Image (cartoon, rainbow, N blue to C red; front, side, top):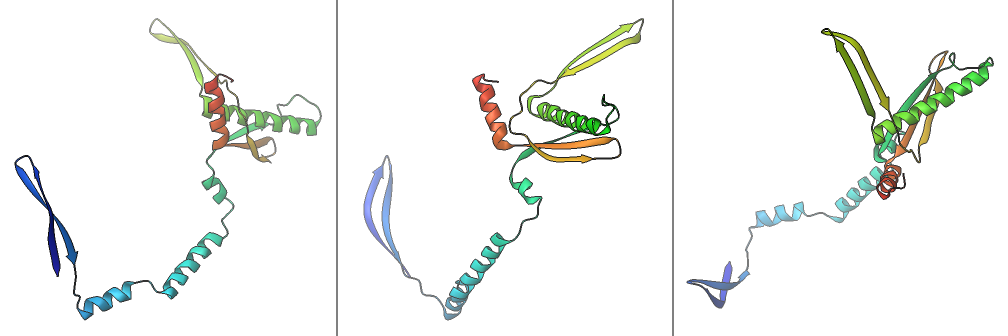
Length: 180
């Protein structure tokens, strides 16, 4: 049952509006009332839902799950042991690891700062005589973390680095201030 009472009469331009205050009293059938009561949460259903939520939060996350929640950029560097300039095998291995790490830093710098590419092509008598491409990377990397250093065969080392979003934001701020 719906009862409405007139409150005020407003005249705006040539149109008039009537504001009403309404009091609604609804009568439900027993069937509708029982279905409404059964859809309401009970204390037991609330506790069960809370326990399910707690079990979700206390689950052990897999090892790789931390990477999914922390935005990072990853880079891999490779280097050969045989081409290192030393007669001592252990020293060549250490030099290869260092070279692979520098290669990974270069890849990070390419991803963050970009690559400058210069090219020159010479054509003579409708034939390509010379084609020269050069690339250069220049940038600063702060806060890179070494994830892996591992041999990938008898003669090669692989280094994986990552940098988090927070470090990237810091690099961008410093770059905008002109400090890098």
